[in-house]
Image 1 (cartoon, rainbow, N blue to C red):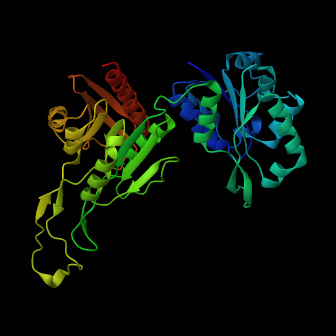
Image 2 (tube, one colour):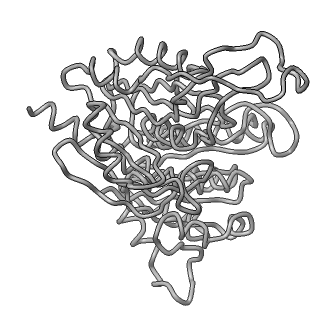
Image 3 (tube, rainbow, N blue to C red):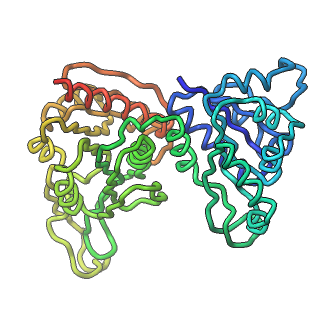
Length: 400
């Protein structure tokens, strides 16, 4: 297990460092956080402790810490990441100054160092900054970013801290660690479908798409090339993911079946409507058009079953079963009927989980009869657990 020491300085982008720490933790790295005094005025140390699982170091002479903790941190680190790296810490690093815990740790470490600069565009362009960066480059310090865009001062330009995904990717590259899904193409579906009744009404469901988007984000973070086929949702597109937008079950089926043969893994997390109106009105149905409105429904195509019937050798197919009763029995029957390798079953009647929630609990069912019961957890965490199981299935298919 690698140990990542993250140095957080007093830039406004300090809040983004929480996500950096969280993502390293999800990769099962040991994460230690060092905060400068100014950083603690922007983000609480308790937040970093919660995402890293470790105490946060904030001072050289803290009463409850060892007097030479900077040496311990310097020795433990396999990589030291400074995010955000302000103009001040970059200057300290370039000139060998050591007047707080972070700067002394940086001076004492022999581990590789990665910095993610963040500052005003004028500071970034200053000659002194250019000189300091050149010094650090010659010493082997790696630099990621900054990006261009809106800055905290209200100006536009270069100076925004790099995206957490890019910081983590740079760190993995420095460590020589390839993502566990590197070189693989995966397809994930998300959201619900909308089956039109007339131009303004549709038959749909309560799916928010959060689970599917979490799965796509996790796969991209693990190095996969990700195709995300999504119904209508209100979620930001994950960075680096190829998004294909659809609306109806028919559209989703067409897009998924066209792309699935080129993918190592297909994860059908979308809540595809089981029924669609047999007749779609060309104009809005008025209240006075008829007494009682009757909508005749017909079944939509069974995308998952079609995928199971055409599944290629070595391909892993994952389905989702949202149930309200007899969870395991219903999901097991669905697994057998659809021909999937892994069925993720969740009881959507459980308060605080399922549709439109950030949390979910699930039972993972496998073709060999195994099952794993997972407690309520954030969907982002559940996504990582699901991909861990998928990796096991991929390895088994390769060995077989």
